[in-house]
Length: 74
Image (cartoon, rainbow, N blue to C red; front, top):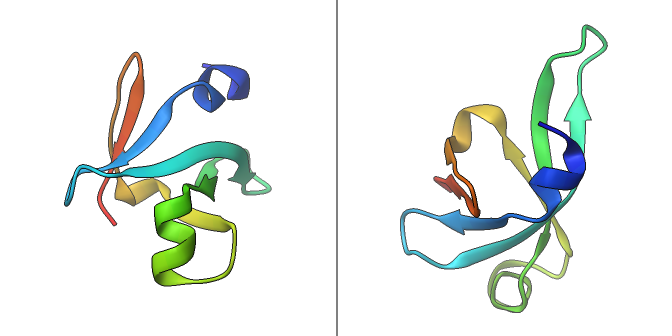
């Protein structure tokens, strides 16, 4: 799967069903293993939790990558 394909998917928190945001980048370790997704937060997450526009989602927080969405637990 390519980064461009991931960027077209919405990131959804399975705890509350709300959209977290969209992927803007990924963090890769020097050995090539994907460490985390960098997500640009939706307006809800920016206003409610912090003033930063980015959120790092660790690989172990990803529950499922589907055709249209990525389900995460945060």
